[in-house]
Length: 423
Image (cartoon, rainbow, N blue to C red; front, side, top):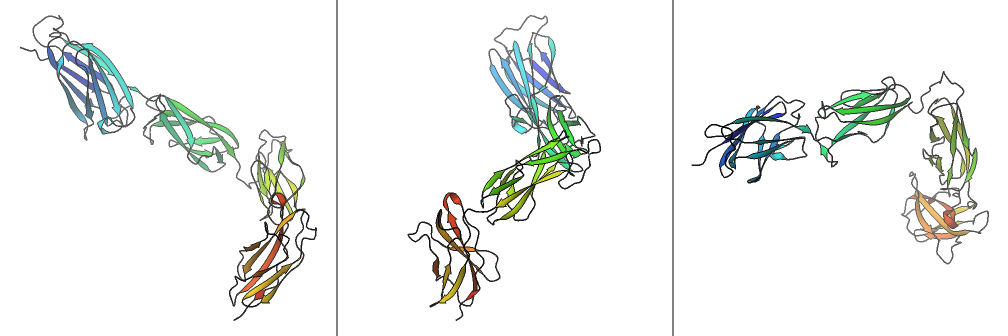
């Protein structure tokens, strides 16, 4: 007759307690390997704690036996907690190894939260108690800004996100509300709350650290705290901060670019904020690369010190083309329902000119539409064109410019007199 043997495993506060019980007569002689037994695993689900990961919803139990191989069972967390039992039937008595793995979802789904392993032997008519502690699977923690910007303005906030990963860099779920302990290396520069929300206090750099409470693993991010753009802040300790721009003057073609650099003296933080002074005066990157508008004129770029926003410098930019704009444009009625538009060539002459562009707009509208371009035509130095696409009882205006090689353009001519064709 086969002897029935039982093994009980209790999960208490993250430790798996195994009651390995042999069956039969007295003594401690190992049972014959041909016998089989029944292994029952009782899991007591304690209150969610550090050793039983907070997000655990299921535990997979893998039993390894030299004869039976590896058998797996999954225990789901009961809705109201308490105890659940997992049973392995007809297990040969002898040496066993039990691996317990905690998962964040039912049916052992998701990335493992923790794992533990214990080995033992079922002896004849003797109870052996073993325990296994489930160690967190978290190997590292990364900290990133929610909005992607590792700066925070004084008086403003920046939300950070902490992510836990296992050794394979797969994300491990962590309770976002209570799973991390946040700290600031210098709360006088920036503080951080329990949710990872950073508040800027004073200019400087600060390291924000998030420690995952169950594994003890941590990650950090360095943030820069700066003054809001346009804020006035006087550096009392060093009022001699100066800013200079190189070059101080530049000439640029319409739509062309120019590079500027700013030098900040007498300040630890030498960064600046770039801007164009005039509306419609082009654009400038925070690396000091200026792009000119289409309209010729005089414009300015400005560099403001971050260390002392009361200190700044400006550079003057002249936007002009080597090709001058046509000086004359006029419009005449032409039957039926068309306008004859004529203009002069560039005042600078036709050298380097590869075409002419004519634009039109309706009265009361600000948007100009290109209606003629002679680039590539035999008569690319055109000085007239018949517009047959007009609508009656609509007033139109025209303007023209010269197009040069390498993308160069002249400025626009003055606006034509109003052109109206009534029915």
